Image (tube, rainbow, N blue to C red; front, side, top):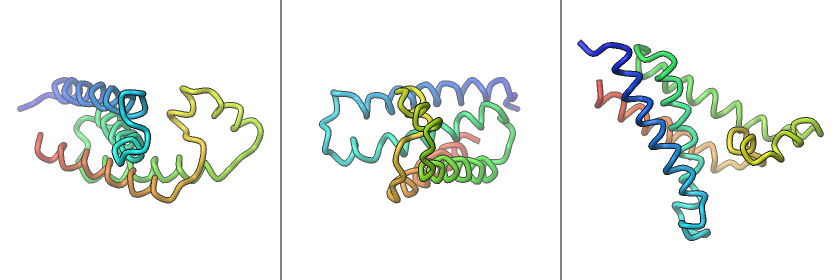
Length: 127
């Protein structure tokens, strides 16, 4: 039987890998106007949320991790419709912008959904 500690270790490795690939997708190493550059960051952001939730609650069923990831992703994207001065100041920080985003874009919802489902598929196969 795999322990929750072992699950957390696997999820942590997956999270770090996802973050590295996500940051690379936004770097100068990836040509700016490619499909990967345009959509990978948001997809990987949602995947990172999935792994983070799995680290927090490693024995949670995959479908609940999927639902939670989709709800968090939707909330973050919808929050980008709100533009008060205080939140825009926070979003002006590069690190905060990576977590909160800046501008609502419909295609981001598709990317978040794809990332969440990729996490669920990988999680199912690991279990």
